[in-house]
Length: 522
Picture (cartoon, rainbow, N blue to C red):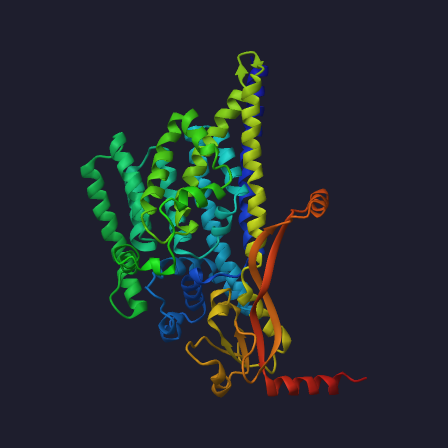
C-alpha cells in the first residue's frame, strides 16, 4: 500500500513537470515569433503608434500620430494604454541607456505576449481540470506547434488584445463557474476592444442559457451592468484623446457590419473559413475526433463552430478574425488526443494493459498530426520574417550615415510594412508620412531620403533595395528536394522580390561618394 502511495506521488510529480514543460514550450514559441518578426504591419499600426505616443509624448496630445493619420475608423486607446503602462519601466531604461527607441517596441510587444501567455495558461489549467491533465498538455502542445496563436500573441491587433480577455473568460466558462465573470469579461472585450467579439459572446451566452448555468434575468442584469461599465471606461477616455465624443468599437462595428465597408478590402466566398483557413491549423483533423470521443468537448465545438458560421456571412474575411475561437478548436482537438492516449495506453488495476493495435495506430496518427503542424508553422514563420521590408529599409537607411542624412519621406508601402514611430531616431533626423505628393515633387519638399515602393524617383539615387516576401513555391527538382530533406531543410522556396527602395537625393549621393573617396585614400 505504501509503495502504491509513493508511486502515485511520483506520477503526480512527473505529471506536474510535464505540464510545466508544455507551458515553457508555448512561451518559447511566443518569444521566438516576436524575435523572428519584430516589425509590424498596417493592421497593428494604430495600437503601436498609440503605445509609442503614450510612452514618449505622454501629455503632449497634439503630437500624437492619430491626429495626422486617424485611419478609416477610430480605435480605442485602452489596450495601448495598458501595454504602455506595463512597458514604461523598460522604456525608461531604454532612454537612460541611450538605446534606439526600437528596443521599446520589443518591450511593448513582449508585454502583450506575456499577457497572452498568462491568459492562455489560465485556460490551459482550466482545460486540465475539466478534461484531465492529458488534455491540458495536448492543448499547450497544439498551440505551440501552430503558427497563428504564437504569432498573433504579441501583435498589437485589436483581435489579439480582445483574445487576452476572452481567453480569461473562457477559462471560467470551461470550468462552469462564475457566470457573472464570464458575462462581464466578454462584454468588456466586445464593447471596448473588438466589436465582433459580440458573436463569440452571444454563442457562449446562449450555451450557458441552454445548459441552465445562467438564467435569462441574471444574464440581462449582469450584461447590462457590464456594458454600462465598459462604455463608461472607454467613451470618456477615448473621447479625450480623439477630441470628440466617440465610442470607437461602436463606430467600427457599424462600419464593418451595417455598412459592410470592410468588403472594400476584398471578399471571400461563404465557405472560405471552413475550406481554406481552418485546415491550415495544425490538428484541425482532430476536432471531429474530440467531439466524437469526449462528450464534454461538444459544447466548445458547437460554440466555436457557431462563431465561425456567423462570421462567415461577413464578406471580408481574414484568418486573424478567428483568433478568439482558435483556443476552443484546440480544446476539442486536445480532448480527442487525450481520449486516444487513454485508449492506446489503458491502465488496469494491476498496471498497464496492452491496447488493441487500432487504438495505438490512431494515437500515433494523432501525434503525427500534432507534431506535423510544425511544418506549415515553420514555413509561415520564415515567410513572416521576410514580410516587413519597410521596417528593414528604415533600419538600413539609418545604418548608412546617421550624422548627415536628415529629412526622410516614408511612402505608403513602407509605412504599411514595418515602419513605426519606434523605428525613428532623434534630431537631426525628421520624418514625414505625408501622402499625395507627386513623385517629381518630392525633391521640392526638401526630403533628403526616401523609403519608396518606386525604383526610380526624379532627383534621387537608389542606395539599397529591400526584398520582401512574394510567394511560396515547392522545390520541383526531385534530386534537390531529396538533398534538402537529407540535410534537414524544407523543400520549399520562399520567393522574394524588391519591395522598398532606399533613395538619397542625387546631389547628396554625389557629395557622399566624393567625401568617401577623399577620406578613404591611404
